[in-house]
Length: 104
Image (cartoon, rainbow, N blue to C red; front, side):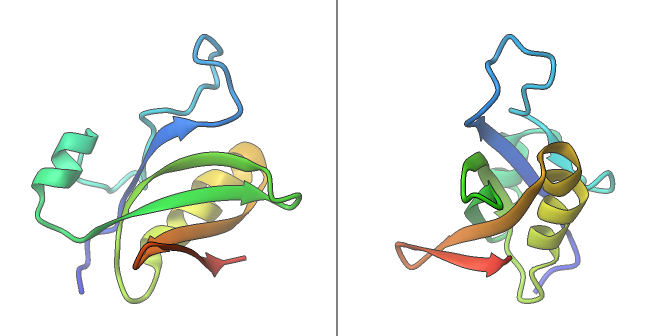
């Protein structure tokens, strides 16, 4: 269990890379102590891959988040970023080789 909460978008499945709203590299929440995927990986914290979807189950974003039992990173990623930025309502994480919906 960790008190550190954080996530990073590594793939924007909707927006072209030359668009100003392209989301790759966005890190949250604001209090996250890391500035890059390399820093997330070097932290030694447990990371898990995630995917964010809208109501129509269209994939918008994927990336990594700090895993925790309370799903705090998942909630911040979805509710602080995904919903407001793109209307995302579902988040799945990769657990034991399978994508599992943790928040919907």
